Image (tube, rainbow, N blue to C red; front, side):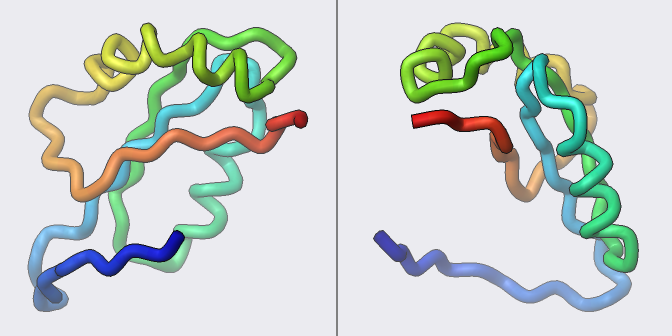
Length: 93
């Protein structure tokens, strides 16, 4: 499903967008991949980890929900996030 979201465009001298990334404890590459992808962009990237096992399935991702608030609470208190997302490269059917 595609959704439309309203947004405002800021000028170049405005603060850079701040992204928060929640990464699975078992993930070893996502932070580096995000930094590589964003290397030429004016973006602040913060990441935190959430406890996870080696196997990443829909069920184990659902079980991580109870730890999501704690993981997000570990971001810097003064950060003004434009978006916070959760990512995994290892989802198995």
